[in-house]
Image (cartoon, rainbow, N blue to C red):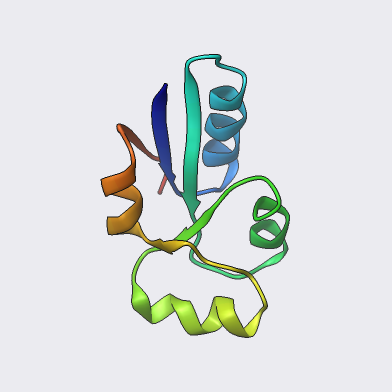
Length: 86
C-alpha cells in the first residue's frame, strides 16, 4: 500500500485526494490545511488533517477541528507527498 500525503487541499488537492482514494494500492495518509474553514471541517470527516507548523494549531483547536500533526509529521508517515500548493 502506497501512503500518500497531500500538501494543500484546494481545487487540485481535493482532486488528487479523490483520485488516490479510487486506487486499490494507495491510501491518503492526510492532507495539509492552513485555515480551519468549512473545507477543513468537511475534509476532517474523510482525512487526517495536518497543518504547516505549530503556529496553526491554536486556530484549529479553537475551531474544534482535530489536527493529527504538522507537515513534517505527514512527510515522515508518507511514501509519496503531492505538493498541491500554489
